[in-house]
Image: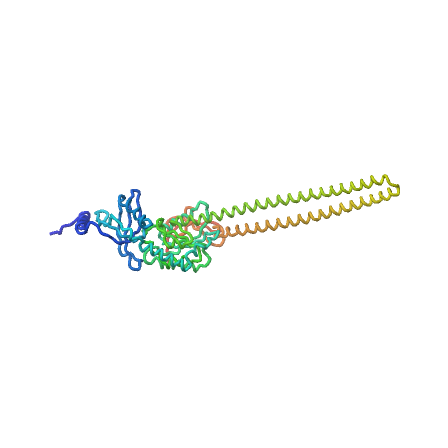
Length: 463
């Protein structure tokens, strides 16, 4: 005789009835909140978690819900009593009813809360870690570093299969300004018990490259808020805070600010936002270079106008002073000549001789003055010309250095150095995972292009 069988819904209904019959109407529950979110209807959905004594591993987890009519009362009451919002990372004491739904499974419905049971281990741990880092004097060390003006060599710490990593690379490669970014992935486990040591190991690997990289991006896309515990650890935060290269975090949680976000140089809410930070920084540098170039041209033109005006002014002044001198001498000679007419012929002859001598002397003085002024004018002209040339040479040298640096990081220069670029449909291929057998690819050398067909694919050790 066959034993009776149940459909899944019938079995789940039996479990639901057993739960209702065996358990009281409500329990007071101690747990930590995680992944708290409110939907458009005002219902609050969350997870309740319990961790081990060290506070690292989750040993129990359950779905929870606070219906909108209850949440509208509990949320402001909790915030008024505790001074903070009802959010993730709080150790709470809540009254719950136990429910088992045939379709949605086990869940806890919150009906009341005790506000005196406030901050949970996650929030308290963050405060302890931040206070310890501040006491050690390392809390703001990474934030005090300066991003280089040309920040386009980026070390990336991420899971190689994470969608956030692909979003990050796509955002950089397709930036509207056409900037070229060079990234190198340092794979790491981004959640779970091994994530802390894995991320620290990736940082140590980056450190071995010395000054090759301009910045480090630690990115992680999505996941439950309860998986963020590793980003609140002291060891990871201490390594990031004291890292000699600016670190930009983007671990994909807008609602949760971890210790890593606090100690990092800059925080992006998502991997895409981190890419936008680098693009915006490079755009600022490009704008400053263009402004410097325009200012150089403007200053040079203004300098030439001023020097031309000064030369003209000196020339006019020289002519004017020469004319005044001649007028004074002529007037003096005329005065002497008028007085001599009423004197004796001998006196007249003497005065006439004196007048001739005075005219000769005045002409010589005028010629000497003109020669001196002309000589001084030539010296001023040479000095101004030399200063202008020096200024133009210095500015031209600066622009040549900037142009040379930009040319060094351009794709054309990469090709000239003997490297190649592989393209599919006009886009650069950076991973074998982007190719499939039978596809056409284009290999670009410095002296031409070659079109090939993908026949086989192989994995490089470590991919």
